[in-house]
Length: 318
Image (cartoon, rainbow, N blue to C red; front, side, top):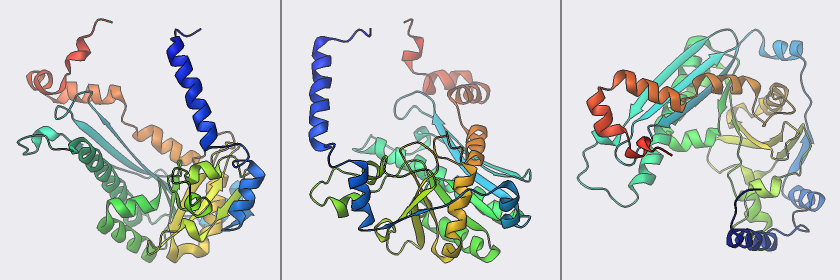
């Protein structure tokens, strides 16, 4: 039994009751929610390819996965150093790596400003997105693969690095390289706002949870941001009740069904919803705590490391 105080137990029970009022079972019933969703979109089913079918569709071209990772030393602003890596990895053995570093200690700032930490987090996100776009662009130029699978929504790459994204999209179109993004978490609210206009706290993640069966696809005009140049779909590639978001270039929408079949075919039915090849890339590129610690210890002078990057809490006994 965990050592939890009676007060905390009571607070948890109160929170559970409050959440149930906001998210009543009768509203989030699977069949009822699916009927609601069908009024503003369309459900369909895709099947998995066999290995030979997938190989024939790719016509001898490789499949490339692109992912990135960032991690930071455990300090407080501005005494942190962030390490970035991105990797484009092809099924034919191709690899292209990119890396970067960021520390607020090298920025000219006289005093902390309100919202500084949020801006730094946004800056780190943009740096990582830029690296991932850059590795994808190199994959297009060097190998001209059949498909590039990117970890995350293409829409977010477009927002974070508009100019670089346009360059990648244009070169992919010219080379006939299909771009597809797979997002593990659905962070939009477009469907929820349309179906429940009076409930501003509902999200698409919640209304789609548990509604779809493996291999099922949901498409709605509400999901596609106007002017983005992207198509978007929701796919249930596993038995997990949470589906994933899939998007691609509107100019390549003729291949949408094939790309959805590809994502479904590459995703283990017992997995978390991400294609296996992207999970392999994720494992290789991930910047772990131990990697950051080892890199800093090896390459930053001891006096600078202890003066600037080692927090006092690291000396705790307990």
